Image (tube, rainbow, N blue to C red; front, side):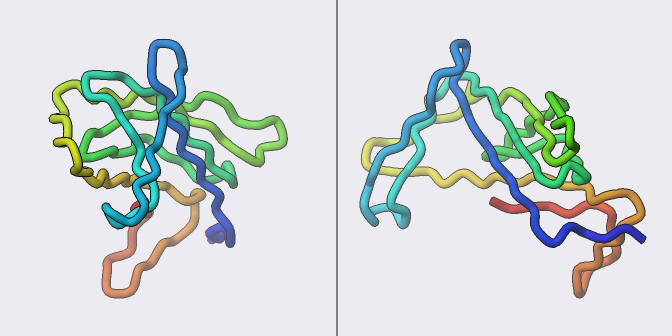
Length: 134
C-alpha cells in the first residue's frame, strides 16, 4: 500500500479577471472574529490557482462558498515536487454583504491520495478521498 505524505503544502491564490489583478484585504481588528477580511466583488470572475506539494495528491474541484469550481491541471514541476491546478470562480448572483457586516466563506477541496493508499477516519467508512476544510 502507498503511504500518505507526512507533510502536505497547499497554496490557494485568487486573482480578479480579466487582468489577473490582485485581491485586496481589509484590516478589521477583531470586530468580525478575524484580523483581516478578503474583499471580493460581486458579479466578478476570479482565477483560482491551487498549488499542492507533493504532486502525488490529486484534486478535481474546489468549493468556494458553495460554488463548485472545476480545476484543470496547469503544470507539474519537472522534478515532480509540486503540481498546479487552475479554475475560475464566478461571483455572479452572490448577494453583497451590508456595510459593517462580513460573510464567512467556507472553502472545501476533495483530495485524492496516491493510488494504493488507504484513508481511514475513525468512525467512518474507508474511502479513497479526503476533504480538506479551509
